[in-house]
Length: 160
Image (cartoon, rainbow, N blue to C red):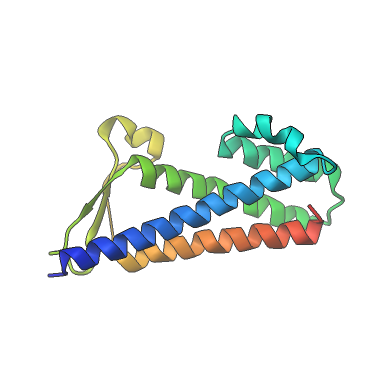
């Protein structure tokens, strides 16, 4: 059996790491959109960004980059792949925020249990409960950090 307090701390650290990197992705995406819309005065775009969901920001970013930046086929492919990963990250974030977690220390291998409320299962794309280890949750946080690094690489490469 795992120690409950240790499990709670490890779970909290892994989930916060995921959320922190997700928020940094959204922040940097917003900065890129602001720059693309008005490089001379990006603050003028803040009101429209404030009302935009992440899904809309991903679409807006893709449209702006395609319309304003000359890209090779490889760059376009890289952009499209990143936007798809962004959509997947949004779905994961929604599941983690709107689902509810059980910490079950007697399950040594996979002590985390994620559930969606019955009325949200279809919306969250979750047909059944998910069990995972702390390491699996931490790896998802790593993937969020990687998504942020990919965005920054893309922005540098395309000059946005």
